[in-house]
Amino acid sequence: MTRDESAIRIEPATTVPFADIEHAFTGGGDGGSCWCQWFLIPRSEFSARSREERKQLLRRELGAAEPSPALVAYVDDEPAAWVRVAPRTHQAALARTQVVKRGSDEPPDAPDVWAITCFVVRREHRAKGIATRLLQAAIDHARQHGARLIEAYPIDTERRKSSNNELFVGSARLFSAAGFEEIARPTESRVVMALTTR
Image (cartoon, rainbow, N blue to C red; front, side):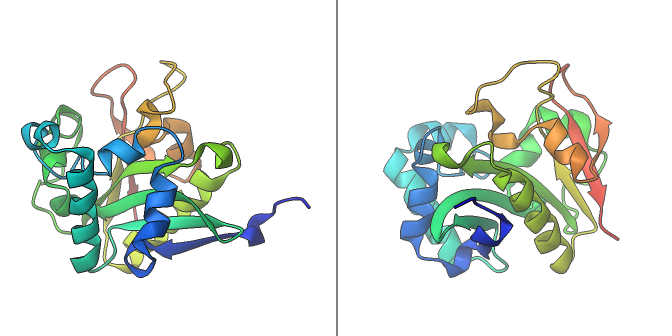
């Protein structure tokens, strides 16, 4: 049977069993070591925390978050991928990164500026358009919850070949196809892109 779009569904991460999130995160790559904490906690704390501690930080976050700070994609009812999409103010370590400091003109405390910062796709589901579907769902999620502007910080893979692990921030091509425009280029291959939602 050929897999089609009807086989993919996307749910808020706060509404699914945490076991589903674990499955999505542990299908290859850095998901199972980072647990999407890279842009949330200071680098020193990130380094000091074990994988299990990072996982528990994510579990606690999802237990208390409103709205959901991420979405999970299912393929044939199997959890296959994740995207983090949340206000920049909810991703505390993001504001301290050079890519944001050098690439965004938005005030760091602007509550209506959201950021899409992390994709995780299980190895067996890559190159099937799931990231594209997740990105569109992330845009819709941010817009429905009051985002004025959505930023992203992808890699320009035409300037630099990158591993799957490095591409957790997404590719410039992916965001461009969804209507994001380049607003800055802090490095030759790292791009700041933005989409106005209203």
